[in-house]
Length: 633
Image 1: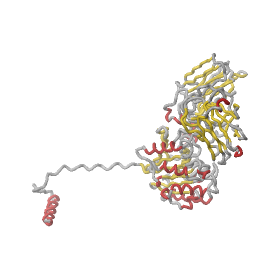
Image 2: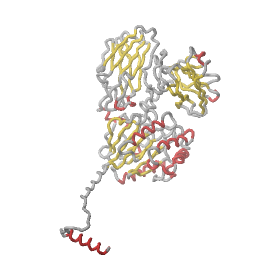
Image 3: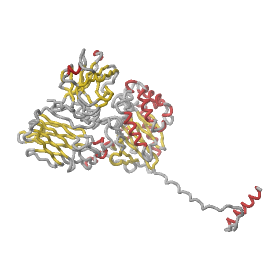
Image 4: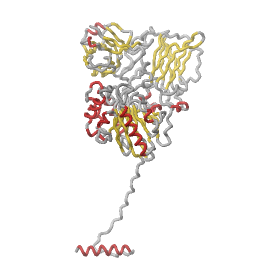
């Protein structure tokens, strides 16, 4: 039977080959129309996709939420990341505690989105590897906590990796991870640096146009190493700038450097303003999780999208580097970049309070070619000797980096108050500054003869003649979590026996946390006790009442902001009293001098007496107090 079937089959094939076919095949079922073979899917030009993030600082406030937000957003793209890069300062205190607790937390968050063989990281100085002499030990903490699966694809041997250099190839592209330790400038062993140069040279010789990716924490430390390799794309962190700034990409050193933005807190201008209000009263700087979504196509073009994980939005326009685009993003761009401007509908409101106090409120400027405004300069000009001179000046940090594409920014979002002002003949000038330029125009009010080249916006002038005291001021209500403040005369309070410090504040929203910045001069031995009271009449009456909540803290790291209460508290006026059970430990709290006319919406006390300086303090939804507090003279 099988032989008969074979003969029939051969006969059918023979007839078909010669254009003949049997008129009938007995017992054969009717044939169906052939199904059309689907065309093969168009192959994507994208060869590699990854996410680059820096400064997750796991262990600090809201860092778990921030890290999750940026990973979740990037993973939602049509092409999710094939690799996840972390450019240093992965944790907040591993470098001081030598504990793997925060590394384990980092790992547990990451593994919700990526696999071990997809993660690449470098370590940064201070937070990850603060000591050059113990750098190998710190790196071993990360290796042990992450486990073998995170390193099995590394090309470099363990000894080289523990010296701060790792190498991996993903989808045919070289990735180098370079650790730095021992302070902000960092260092790397000479032999290890020499080995890095050799490895980069070898990778470059494979294909001069093919991008080589490098991960290191501190910008600038490898400039001389990569100057001859324009195809290098180096990703860094450390300065906590926003990726909305156009200077977050730079090719001035002969290669491309990308700042990754950070997934912890925001600094208005990195370390450039560190001794002069670097945070500029930004408020909610922890509502910040930015990063870079990077794709490489078959022509080696590297396209970079700037991501805002909090708002789930893409920031600004894409950047593209690659063959023929190695010298596009240089400093001379600032000479031709469109300047930010105040639009015709931007509002400036000037309120005269009594005879010598002035409150200024205004809208944001529209972003220009360098990105959004970073801060605003508010100048009060008074006429002196026939000439208008700056009598008082305040800088206010822009909140635009927290609102991608200027969507959702409240009207009259910024405000400040001047006291002791001469209001008979004066002018108010508000100027915006981005990373390169000041705004093309300004918001200007004048009640005298002062004139300005290019004023803009709508001006509102209000007098409050009935105001009984010029010593009353307020802060514009905004949903903030903490206010950071530095001045050039920052001081630190030392405790002595029986000393206490306290803060009187009055949230007009329910709040859940209170924050203080503590100083222990680099050690981790200090102890503090916190007692929260509902304010009652005066200081002494208040502390004799029942406590609302208490908290104790010990072993804290200096120069760090801590949550010292964690509950749900109703709106109202409170007093937080801070004491130490052991004054001999030399613990302390940051406080700072207030500029004339400055008001932070709370009052600080030492030993029950009001201080002329302010503690470094904030609370969830920091906003105008229901009971106005006086402005400091």
